[in-house]
Length: 135
Image 1 (cartoon, rainbow, N blue to C red):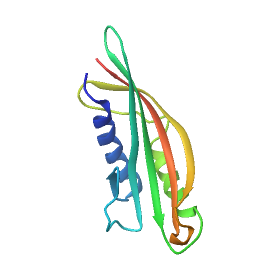
Image 2 (image 1 turned 135 degrees about the horizontal axis):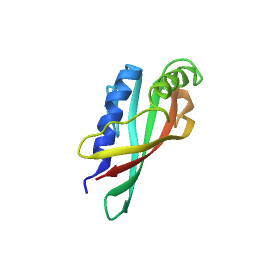
Image 3 (image 1 turned 90 degrees about the vertical axis):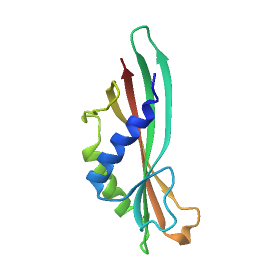
Image 4 (image 1 turned 30 degrees about the vertical axis):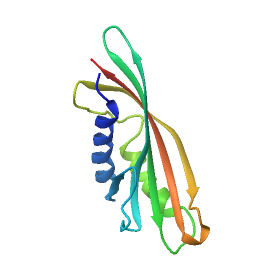
């Protein structure tokens, strides 16, 4: 059994960059990141072993970060719409290493303020749940 998070991360990276045209970071953004970017975070996986194959429930958070002089979530929510159009429950996921994705669900969409309201950081976080099987 291999770690399914690696293949899921690769798939999301490719599809996030093509759907949003924003830089995508794994876990944490660079200090000199632009004012608009995406962070893939919160990857978790729980394994259920079967006799024939391994099944994993995988969760990944897509964190859209917008830093600007305006107040509000409009830009982050516009980008989230682009991502949700490209990655939703109708999306087929193609993975390597014998992994097969049988289900993709948008588990939550939430807005999150920055730690300091004066920083003008607005975030929209999309949480995806995926069922992965490896034969």
